[in-house]
Structure formats: structure tokens, C-alpha cells
Length: 350
View 1 (cartoon, rainbow, N blue to C red):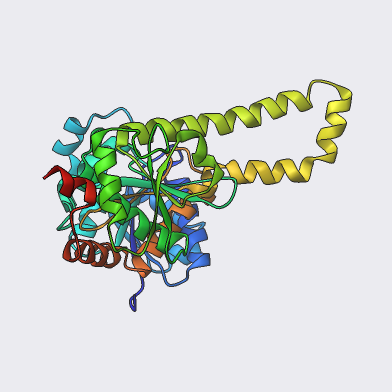
View 2: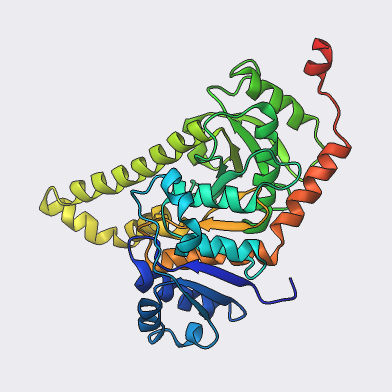
């Protein structure tokens, strides 16, 4: 992209509010001086934090609103007052072309509802999907959908695979990411009809990806594939299970090292390795989930993200804007549809 990316921030979203959001913007501006920000929220609170963030304050556009979306708000309540909220205004900025992407740490369900209603889906995409990075034993992997769609058919899963591969090529820098469908077994006969049909379609597709078939939940952490595709129900369970397991590992290690004087000595000797483990499993290091398939970019940050974590979400938005993820997705979908043929299993059934 030749123009400087403009990022709209929901300053009031998340547990940390303006203090975390503006500090994160300052970190992001240090990393990417070309970024420009539009800041939505209570102007007095924003101005107070901008006094500590000279790089952002230099040319940020501040848009005042008293409206906020709370974590307890239901989507039906949110949509009635979306246009007066900091979250809704940030998404509207993308729709109006005033910003290239919006980033919020607010209510996930509310952000999903506002983004879907305001931006609509891209041509060729039936439903948007929520994608995020997961740490593995090797490198990070992309997983989607993580909760936007509880039930999906084979066409939805194929579209998710196309979008996930484009996301991995941008954020992970992979030319031909390895893509797999989450299933209860790796064998071709396992799983629902939707999964089997989606697998057949992907095997016959001519796309910049390597289709690796099925992957089981216990293999996600190995990092053998770069993109894991699932319906939102299963994907959200897998994500929460992985996050809970990571916290469990850290908690058990902490207890073990405190159990005796010898264990504490072992902790002292292992501090470097443990810091590396904690950093690898830290959600802030992988922060920034994306609603893929919309006519505009919306990035969701963890509600409890630190300034460094929120800055990572801004980085994701920056990279997707610069690499023009929407163009990549449209190009891949058009190519898939143009060369699409019925897979052998489908042809045999006709």
C-alpha cells in the first residue's frame, strides 16, 4: 500500500481503557512511524493519555463520544446504540473510508454484530470467520473460525480455508501454508459429511496452499500445519481448551518449583528457560484476532491485553492493510471458482 495505514481505535474498549489503548498506539507508532490513528472515546480521557504519547498526539484525530459498549451488553442492545459508541464509530470509520482498519478490545459479541451489520460480507463469502494465531511447538499457526459461526456447511469451511491461507501468507509470511480441517480423526472416513465434502473440494482446488487433510485436536499444538479450519463451535472450544492448558502448565510448574528448597534451587537454575516458555505461551504475544471476509478490516484484541499485547493487535491490522488481505482473498476465491471442478466423491454420487 502506498498510503499510510489509518487505524481507527475503540479507545474505551477493554479492561485497561484509554491508558492501555493510547500506550499501545505509541508503541505501534514507534515500530511503524507511518501509521496514523483515529481515536474514538471520551475526549478528556483521551487527551490525558495523549500527553504521555507524543508520537501519537502529533497527528491523531480525536472523535469524542460518551457512548460505550459494556462487556455485559447483549448484541440486541448494542445495535440500537452502536452509532453513538466508540466501538461503532470506529467500525463506521472503516465503512466510510476514513480508516483502513478498526481495532477494539471490547465486547466480542458486540463487535461481531456491529462489524457484520455495518460492513457486510465480501462477494463470494457467505459468512465472516474469526481468525487468530495460536502458539505451537514449532511456529505460530492460524485457526478459524473461533466463534463467529456455530454451524457451518462444506462451502463455509472451504471459504474459511481460503481466507485462513491468505491470512497465514500475510501474517506468517508463508508462500504456501499447510491447511487442515479439524476433525475427530485423520482418516478420510472420519467426520461429518460437511467435513468430508469440504476436504474433497480442497483436495481438488488449485490454490496457493498445501491441503494436509484432517488434523485432530491433540495435534494442533505440534505445529505440523499452519492453518486449522473448523466451525465456530468446535474452534472456540479448542481455543479455550488450549488457553486453559497453557495456564495449567504454568501453574503446575510454579507449584512444583515452590514445593521444596531443592525445587527452588532448580527454579533458579532454570529461570531463562522458564521465561522463554512463559513468553511463548503469553496471550499478549499472539494478540489480534481478525474478522475475515468482511468489506473492511476489524481486529479484536483480548479484553485484558497489556499495552504490548494491544500493540500486537495494531501490528496485525497494519500488516493486513499493507499486504491488502482483501485483495488476496478475492483473488484466491475468484481463482478457486474459475477452476472449480466437482471432486471424485461428489461426481460419483451424481
